[in-house]
Amino acid sequence: MSRLPRKSGPGTLVILSLLLASSGAMRLGAEAGQALAESDSAPTETGSEGDLASSEAGAVPAECPAPPAALAAALAERSAEIDNKSAALEERMAALALAEEAITARMAELETSEAKLRDTLSIADGAAEEDLVRLTAVYEAMKPKDAAALFETMEPEFAAGFLGRMRPELAALVLSGMSPETAYTLSALIAGRNALAPKQ
Image (tube, rainbow, N blue to C red):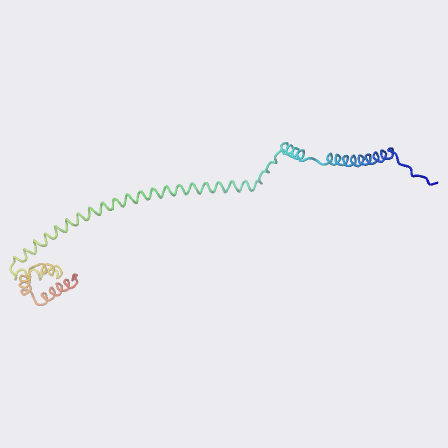
């Protein structure tokens, strides 16, 4: 006689479900514990930034070391040298300014003196020209023979100057009363003076 298979009751399914649930809970608890351990051991960003800020706030700034004595002395000497050169330059500039003022004043005085000298020379030249014109008129009024004798006693350049101012007909009469040598010398001087005169 064959034996019928026994049907599993609801107790077996309950046991299997409990085993699976407990296994999942154990695995979940292990993962949660590991995550908690890692979070406790690793510092958070906020904590690290807070620690850094507190360390920076509490840190005392380092003081710069004082420069060596030789360097400080060299810098002080260089600074004093620059100050001396600057003062000397300012004095030189002031002296140059005074010299420029003196030169400007002197130039103004020289220009004034030159203007006065020109006026004096123009007056003197005018007076001298008037004297020459008057004296030439006197020689022209003399007898040609007397004027010739007077001109022969003068310096040749001086006599030639008066002959050149006289009217040509009167100058010819005076030359005719002179010795040929004197007449030739005066004629050569007058011709040479006219040759050097500008043509235009």
